[in-house]
Length: 321
Image 1: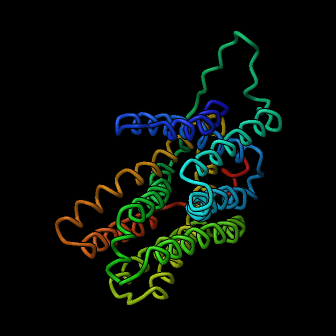
Image 2: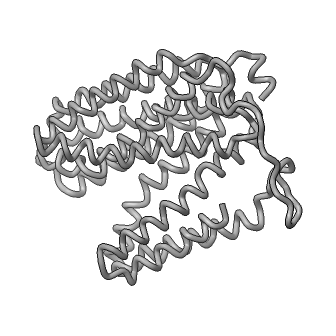
């Protein structure tokens, strides 16, 4: 994790001096490597420190911090750019990365079970990665976080074009993104707590259904208010489904292999970030912006149906984990 956070502090400085596409791609590759060393380990550490009855809330707060940054980051970067030039956002980014590195270095302790002496090799972990009978549940929960990545990919590529088709301004695009990110963050907190009361499968299904409905209504939106409401609905759906899926993953997988588990889980999210723009761009080239929207409606419907195959963790299984 410290390696990843160190890359977060270094990478923004490299952007300042980047002078070609190849150098930008190399820096982005470094960022991806750093993120892969942070996100799954952070989730595993949070789950290790949370009681089984409080995992939904813990994952809700984790997701809320992630989406809060997505909501505030573009706004903060724009303000700094206007105020002090193009290097200012990158300097703030580097400073935040350095602070995060120091906080983890001095304030976050390794779990006792994985502490090693110098020169000692970690013991090989045994046992099934996924509890017997929960493979389909694992795949379905991973598809939920894949959906969050797909939505992010759509926003990156299609949201400006979609907004332009409604006659909206650039500032309106920022407002829509702020509404989406804020609603996702806030609903992660609320529904994370609800997930700890039971009914995680129900929350996942309703959340996925809300996302499908949001996309299905996008072609009918006629202005800023309607578009913002639909992206609010998308954010609410992700806020309902995300923490419940992450908590259910913890309940139905090996506690000694959580880093591996959440590595796979986050790979699903980033696969959506990669695949989403490809699907959006390809379908938009063939059928226009609404063609891309219809493609995402189909994906949302498929993931919603897949959530029906989720199996709730039994009480005995939760006690063991």
